[in-house]
Image (cartoon, rainbow, N blue to C red; front, side, top):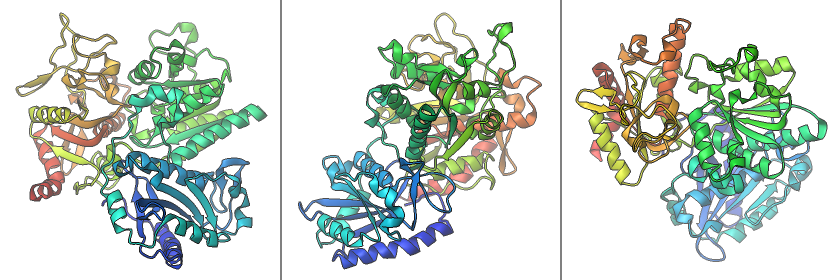
Length: 598
């Protein structure tokens, strides 16, 4: 199994200190044959549980699993009396309660492992603070345990051994371990398919690790704002598919149901329209909860309790556009409006998805404006990866390929969780992806903006994207369908979208199983790296002289980063430039050779 990341020295130290303790406890409990699955990777994510114990159920004889979250803490206390947040000496930010963390891991494993579909109760979990006495973590003991989860300390080691004996028979657990490891992951619950139910039932999504911390921290800030008339902002950062929008919808549904004044806002027409259509289907009230970032130009300070700014990398310099009245063109920064309008503004963003010249949605821009306004800011980075099949390795490969992260392009050596293919023509790409559609997967083709974009003519889209003898139209420009082609905002999610080539503005914020990406002549390989070619791009936003070559290059690299990270199962690539095609082929050579040998 590959994880796409090296092991840090702190992790190695943690293993050396914690794993022998757990192994010794198993032996002393008479359970030395129970399997220990160390650093178990949760299906379709890069999240890892410290240990999953696998064995034979002491009562039923079936498979039994216990997720163990190992903590070396010797002291801990609740963060501002919040039962879900914890402070640990030497760590200068709030952490999640380990019992809540392991509870979510149990839910997720049971939900996404097909071998457990008929037996979800076979998974239980413990948080084991093996260095801590009860007195030194007494605050943490108040969180109620459940039938599925328990918390043990050094003081309670005897109880832990009894617990283990109650879970497992003294028989080999290798078969149970293999069944879990070989279990086919059930497809991820994609955001849009369950968004409508999310408003009514938050349990449609299971939040994990830092996702849950971000959720709990916002809830804490909301309670504090209501009780003490305070104001705080929360920034949540993460790469593609790390769960930002899942957090956003979870918060929206829960806060609304509990009577808080809350709105959801984005800077993306496609994303907002899709949310309105899916989440607010049949309810004008729910549809009205989804706004745009420029909706708050005239809003009073602290008009409502919470504003959830999803896709916040799309925050612009100002909210004014060509339709804005002269009296409203004050030059006020858009981020200032968003910070001011709610008691708790929440920003969810990926800085590598800033793709337009006037977009300024970065952590620094938000923090700087918040500091000027005297607003306290919490920042939660999401480390998990849910899109790209859970392959952080693939996202890192893309970032280095595009020179967004240092190190330069590297060979793609393969990953158990994600597939990368290079095709020799756009026609082969289309045929490959049509095969995926027939197999029940979702798929789309997108490209850099390197071809003209015509208006529809006589009720038909124009085949503007032409490469050799292959041609396809761009996605629809406007908000009305053209024939079988869905409106622009629904290209990524509605039937008929596969027949058009999508641009970054219709792909951003969405996911599909298989992503076909055409690298246009605006990014080419020369001398071992990708360079940008400004004159090959047709986007009117980049024609302005105010956009420098450096800004252009940064945005083009971010655009292709967005396009290359839409797929959940795999990506199919074709480069128009022959030298670039050969360059990519060289990077994928080892993976191709490995596939041929199988």
